[in-house]
Image (cartoon, rainbow, N blue to C red; front, side, top):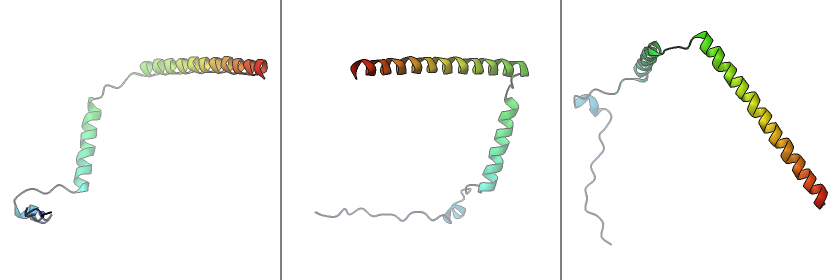
Length: 91
């Protein structure tokens, strides 16, 4: 088999960014500060729920949780008794 005659070019060095006139990526500190400014701007746009809305939503969540916990308990209880009853008949 013959080897490919393609010529590989050397990758550009990191230090060449200053020489080509391109702005290098800002440091991690500057990017973090920019991120925090963006977060602050977005939080100013948030429409926060009232206390009454939070209480009502919390009540709905708790009632739903209790309902599904009771439902899961009931299904488990019935299934366990059914399996134990079948074992008693078969065994």
